[in-house]
Length: 152
Image (cartoon, rainbow, N blue to C red; front, side, top):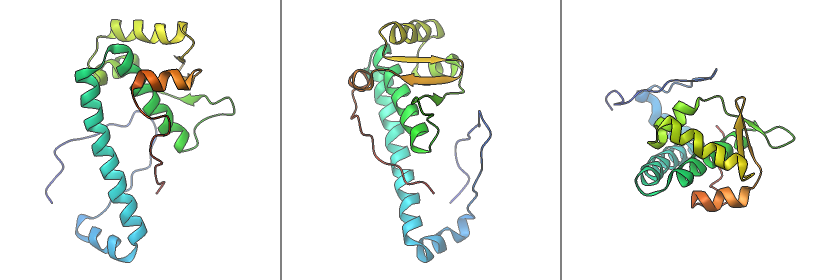
C-alpha cells in the first residue's frame, strides 16, 4: 500500500481522519460495520469519478452543470447543511465548477444564468438553492434519490 497517486485541497475548514494503513485491517476486524461503511464510501466515490467522466464526455453543458449541482446539493443535505428553506452552502468559485466539468468559465456562467432564469437552480453568494428538483434531476440524467451515504 504505497503512497496515494493524487492529492486533495480543502476549500473550507475540515476535519481530517487519518488511518494508519498498517492497522486498517484491524478496523475491519474489530468494527465490521465501520469497515463496511469505509468500503461503501470508497466504492461510491469511485463510481462518482466514473460518472463525472461520462458526464464530461457525453453530456451538454446544461446537463453537466445540472449533474454537478445536484450531486453537491445532495451531499450537503446528507450532512445536514441545508437550512430551513433548503438552501445549502456552496463555497466554490465558478472557475472550480468550470474546470471540474471541462467547460470554459464563460460557458459555465451562461449555463448557470439559464438555470437561474428558468427557475431551476440558483447559485449565488456561496449558496445553492434548487427550485425545481424534478427538472434538474431530469437534466442531470440521474435518479432523484441518489444513494444514501453512511456518515462516519
